[in-house]
Length: 167
Picture (cartoon, rainbow, N blue to C red):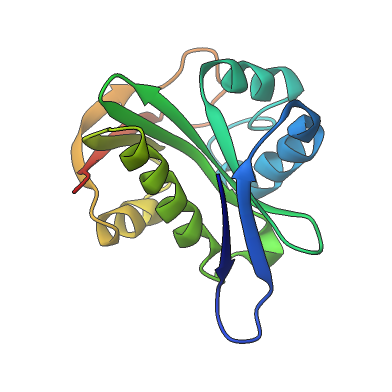
């Protein structure tokens, strides 16, 4: 998978490609930087190199790069005729540029090409601004799920599950 995305006039061009084993260190750093916003509810880093490798065994990462380096990522996993999307992250200095939307489009196209009829995702209940972001992009709430028991939390959390039909 490879696509070039120009975010706005004058913005850098981004190449979106599949992540490889050699990307694990940079991807780990990017995810942890992008998810620092969760520190009020979750203790510690979001992932480590072993965690990224474990994700790569079940699914794939789509990575956005420009001339500076790794700029964003999204995890995609095929689950029968449905796709699962997670770990959408953008390098903090590049947030607000539209790159998150470009990665969402790339993930949804990945699932369409794989024959999926829908995409599922889940967000941490404490990240309420994400509800509006995903609703704006056509996702609807489908329920809740208990939070991962092995993740150290600072406040009670649960997952909000959302889905979008692909057309």
